[in-house]
Amino acid sequence: MKADTADQHWNDQWAGIEDDSKWLRPEADVMRWAAEFESGSCVLDLGAGVGRHALALAAKGHQVTALDAAPEGLSAIDATGAEVATVLGRMDQLPFEDRSFDHLLSWNVIYHGDETILLNTINEIRRVLKPGGTFLGTMLSKRRLPFEQAKYPGREISRNAWVFDAPGTDKIHPHYFCNAAELLALFTGFETLWLEDREHDKPGSYHWHLKMERLS
Image (cartoon, rainbow, N blue to C red; front, side, top):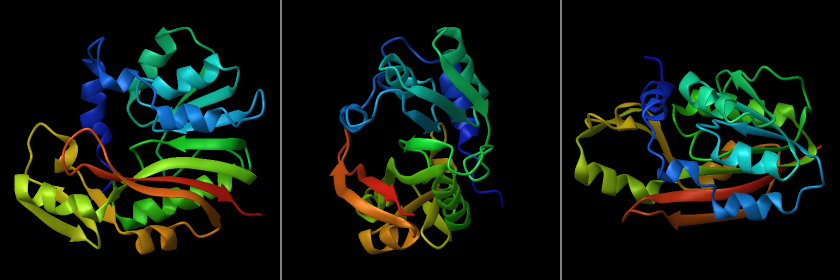
């Protein structure tokens, strides 16, 4: 079974996105992180969607590349005319040279798959980051799992990877849930700078927020 299939759902979402969508507004955590960058930093937005973060970072003068597996999102970025390089690709096979980026963002993205996809993606993130470069991202907390199980029938397809009978949502595609110890074990070759388990806009919507530094 192919595990990283959620882009099928999100491609449809980006094709019909509304002007007032929350997916058009950059996250405060991301902008605080970017305030630490040197001028003109090279940044990869992995899983950029319609570009809410890529466009904001480019507007700050950074050299931004937006990668996504959903072409409708990249088309929306291109339509703005902003100086953002868009690349159609998959998160576990990044088409970039080693040590290409000063910083890498992946917001609500890399947990869409099983553990093999996730580990390969983290390896790719480490490969394309320069030593000392930072990664900012989110993961799904295991504290969220009981809330999802209460709403939808679900099954664990492999360790920590779940699919749910939730038509019309991306939860029909695999999602990976982890606790803190499991998360830290995944990120070998990184130093943890910040880790917080936070509820998002809906009750029970717990996500890990993490900032990592790539070791030499």
